Image (cartoon, rainbow, N blue to C red; front, side, top):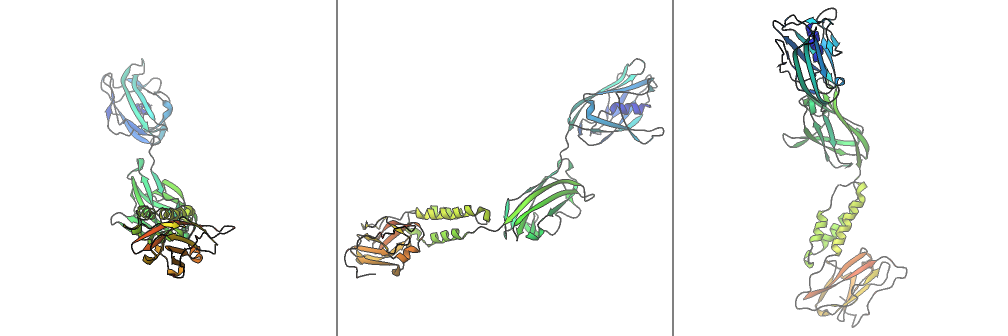
Length: 449
């Protein structure tokens, strides 16, 4: 075996990325120049070369090549044959001593080519020697440390909501990382199982801040440099269902080699019923906020309403409506106008059961001559829905009107020209034995309002 082969075998344990030539420490007149680097990646083939440099008296000396690796199982190396029938072929290097038993003549300027591949990450020490064939005296010795790291693969990640709501354009993001393939020209491809269920897919153009409809693969036809980036899209569904979305990043050079991919599951559903929320908001808007000490909590519960939830979140939507109604029920009326001392003297905090044919009566000590009307939950009650008589003031809400009120706590306000007086009352479910909760009327009841 010639000198180039021996040196090739010696270097076989070293897989590296650097191409900076380095000279091996020489014991005498012999040295080695090589493109050995200090770092390598697992699984990547690394090409490098080794050149012997020698002068008299070493030139022509019969030598052997030796090498040792702290973990010889971590690397495989091939050398390029330059002579004989196998010239130009890549052949594996084996063993730890190279050359015929009698050695081979050391030559100056001989260069050999090699390629190596590491199979696991780690830090390895390689010792290379050129020794005399007769007595093993080293003519050149070289120790090299190589750090081998795992390849960082590119990734693609789809970040989207668990459920899309029909008819609502909903945004999602696709994020890529370049890893060790950063800068490679790639194409973005996607496959969706429920195309018929989609009304439209759009992409966000960063340059002008606009959304444009996507009709094919994303990215320019020639590809884009792979890197750490996030692209934004939005989709509008027209049908409910569960579908799969496959996103691939492929090498633009051949259009088929997949560098990264992800499969996501997408669900779409109808919108939840917001009728209770709308009714609660309408109730709040019908109130005269100036009649209450603090309307803030009602406003806050309305502001906290989240629109666009799907039917799977119906319970959450109904809870929003209930929080608004609870805030309304907790409102406190302002104090009676200064200078008056009106009070509810009968029928305060009464309860009226659904199905009761009798009305609900309260009595105030207010001057009936100053009485102007009735409000329930801050809303003026039409005159046909109640009766009012003197003595001092006796007001009866009609059963038909009470039936229209929601079950729960309400506020009844008697309004006078110089003040107001209020009490709460409760609308309860129909009882097995419905009893009217009217208070006895006093005075002349023929003068109704």
